[in-house]
Length: 79
Picture 1 (cartoon, helix red, strand yellow):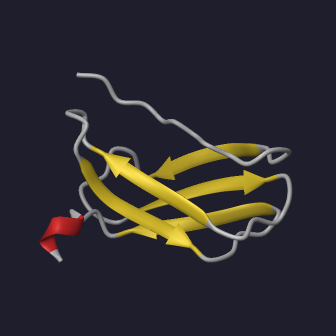
Picture 2: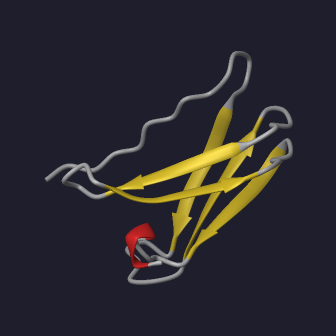
Picture 3: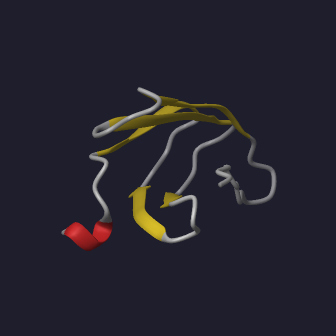
């Protein structure tokens, strides 16, 4: 099985300093990242190694520099 990260960003936006912790995680985890400029919205989609969408997380606004999105580790199908 293979896992990876794919990023889609708008023109002139640089995404950097991507990290997650704890890794590996069996529950709550935090995704942290930096942006080169403010963003109107950020969406993070989490997939299983089989390619099934597990969760969709987002922020209405992300500021330049350091940001974070917390995830409870639960599948969206679990409610």
